[in-house]
Amino acid sequence: MSKLSFSRIGAWIRSKIFLYNVTYGLYMLDWWERYLFNTIMILLLCVLCYNGSRFTVESVKRLVWYFSAETGKNNFMNMPMGHHRPYNFIFSWCYSRVLQVSLVLQCRNW
Image (spheres, rainbow, N blue to C red):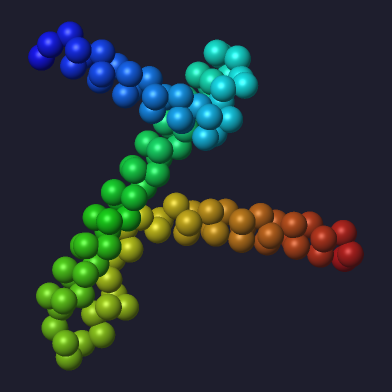
């Protein structure tokens, strides 16, 4: 590649960075605020990609399991729910706290 090609690629990259800064209003921030915003955006994008990949894999597993199951049985209701365990933990924790509070209130009224 010639020097002209590298300068054109650099100009194109600079124009895209400028467009990004103007679109999201980052041009008026200090350098450290811009880095902080970009870091948060990259982290959110990583979390979104990670959870999206988990959801996609789990959905494909469910579809394969559902279509490979026998049609005469109700196998869909017995399907393993792998990534829903944390929600069950949170529900059980909240339920135990409600029971503790209700027991304390009953003891005070007794």
